[in-house]
Length: 219
Image (cartoon, rainbow, N blue to C red; front, side, top):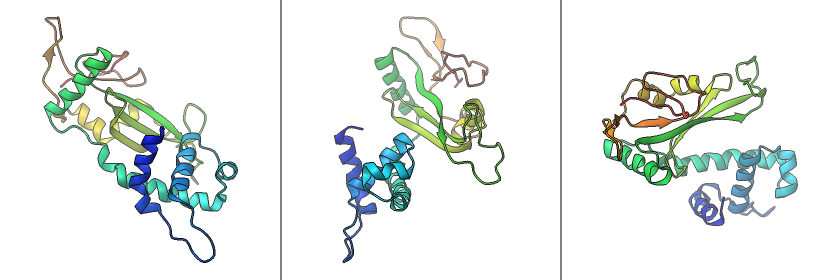
């Protein structure tokens, strides 16, 4: 994360995470709280290891990370927005055409396993094929790597193809419930093709669904 982005995020979350000094001790500054949280999220290091880099006790780090994550979610929840009209989907397609020379692409879909401690009495429910316990972040991004959809929480045992079918967005895709544009003619071609989402071969093949391996989802 560059300094400009960090400062922008800090400005947004400071009112939610800033603490007042007391007679006994000075409060941990918002920039330290945010920095420690981002480092934890990026590296997955234990609090015991982070204390040497942050000069914050593990007990305090546990509270700070949870509180700061809640603040980030609160501030950025409106920044991730599923397009609501054909024109908005076409705008995303235009971005893929300009940046990646991929016409009629309206999003790139993939899943990310987030490591967790094994929940009590969960058996192998969260144990994934990579041999660790996880929950899955299923995301869809535009041509600039900006999220337009994010869903997190499915247990890691489920494959990417299974996860997307369990999300509201995925169900909307397969029900053809999204306001996607109608198929259009490709540039410099007489072929008329649907607007598509691109993904890897972890996702199940469907009608008009191929792999790039892209997933082609009919409108």
